[in-house]
Length: 125
Image (cartoon, rainbow, N blue to C red; front, side):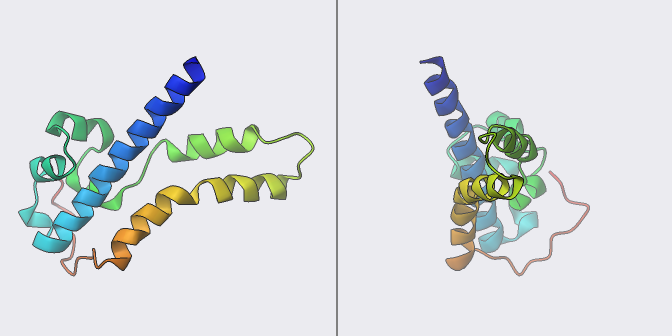
């Protein structure tokens, strides 16, 4: 039963990270990076600003949406593949298991969630 709880917790964390990323993308697309605050992103994702900082260091990080835990999860998934499977088969299986997150992220792009506003390198609040 503990495995189910840990799995649910991890899924909720991933869902929160994704909600923050998508909120950041949409807000920046609508208003531009400089006009969007961390508070705006947190409000749109229905979390507190403190929760925002559990997932991202800045609003720019939320827009980019990189997950620092992703490489470790990929390595763990690869290492957990059956011993009789070839490395290529294992890699393909791991890759097939990871696109769910990216499909959700790309769907925002298909719906016009893109910003023509350049992201200034100095703005990170």
